[in-house]
Image (cartoon, rainbow over all chains, first blue to last red; front, side, top):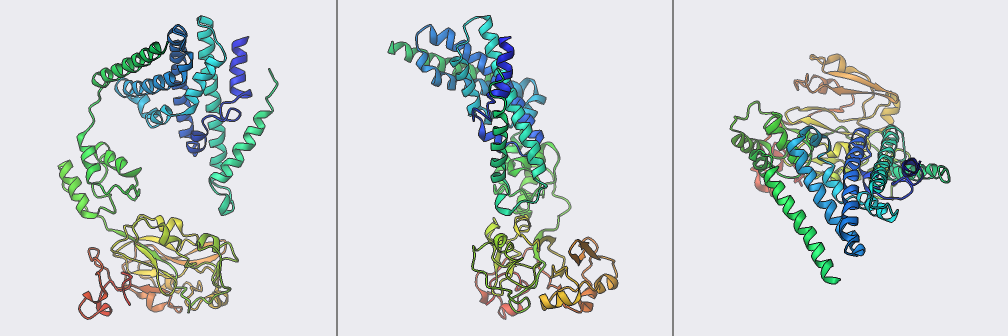
Length: 195
Length: 299
């Protein structure tokens, strides 16, 4: 039941983009068409689940044992950067088709605040160092990235229609996108208090 | 405690560094050195005129997708030859260079001012004020949005407020045409000489009143064209004659027939001709220079 609460809560109630305001950069930058939005969304999902598990393990196995919890930010940055690099090389060599689909987004993801943000949120939520904690961490990372994917797809769908709309010159492009983003964030406030 | 922090972080960094170094050896993918070489010879402007995403995208397409060697518009034949050398292929089928052409002759004399525009110096803003400062709401605004947008400094507002394209510097990338709010700039092969210098879609009397050199949509040009290259193109506000440049032979029949003299026959341009540094460099002065209408240097 708690796993379900984590998943539902992360996707809708505290949506990573629309209520935690992380990952605004790709949300505005890569949401011009649905195809690249979906590509970015799935790449984030892939990296986020892997990096969350790895940082969770490093935190408990290394930092907690030596009472170095205050080093988690810098240790996670290091871990995530190395992981994404490694992943890029691995995909390029072994799964070229996946690399073709995700390759452009991987360097973007290295410095994406959503990845580090969720790694830190996982620690903040206090998931224990056990199988249950592992599942909670993975579920939280998956659900948050699913929320990111949802926000990206919604936004790109709206933007594709806005392309056809006749807007005043001053409102074309980003200004309208900001209006849309704020309306979407307001709509997601409606989920507050469901759990 | 402090020492643990240093050791742990150093160890983390060392392990990750080692893994990455090992992986870069183990997982190295052979990339084609020709791609790097082609990126080296390309101008690096990333203008996109080749139709690929930037210079790197074009280099990759040449090597891996068999893209044409001479697609680099600003690089012209010299870069195409360099790419040909790298690829070990001859550059075939010289493509004709394209340049921007203006479809408006609404000078100060021809299209009288409706009001004096004193706002921000931008065509997009001026056009929102009663369709622009001249009586013709279809023509060039003349505030130089194209001039500021041009990445190659090839288009400048002339004395009579219309932009003048420097055909030697213009690479036909189309940035100005996209920027123009009136869509009076188009990208046309450089060897085409007949151009409709009007964008006014109004009919008869209305068009006559708006500009002294306006198309009145009479359709005579479309009737007399021996190649059938001219068509009256309609949209919701009216019609204008448009030339199909694939069919136009430059015979000039329409130019002679047009009662409003808004179809012009330009002097031929030598595609390789470079504008002179000073107006006096050409024997006989600017008047005898074949590119005088387009070089922007004439006094």
